[in-house]
Length: 125
Image 1 (tube, helix red, strand yellow):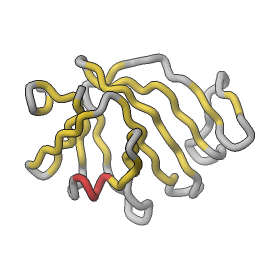
Image 2 (tube, one colour):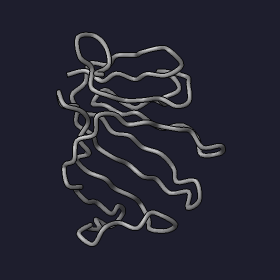
Image 3 (cartoon, helix red, strand yellow):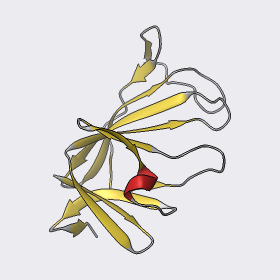
């Protein structure tokens, strides 16, 4: 599988079946992470975790705390695309794979950036 990042008329294709998005919450200043799977029909959120609770960061009742993170597994809904926006003062989104992490801006410097499963060398329509 491949993931397509699209923004400002450019497309970056990454051969990956799974990835993690991470960012710092703009108000609470704590880390949030989401694990995503790339499927032919779109992107599926596999697990979410947050270091602390607070403004808009309340984990669902089924979340478990491991001493550092609250973890939970969402319903498995598949999204056709994911649109990322940068908030002033929040920093960039971190994009992580088994090979390491980098900022989304180092891959595609635009706002917004749309992520979707790729089909035949380009984003799905």
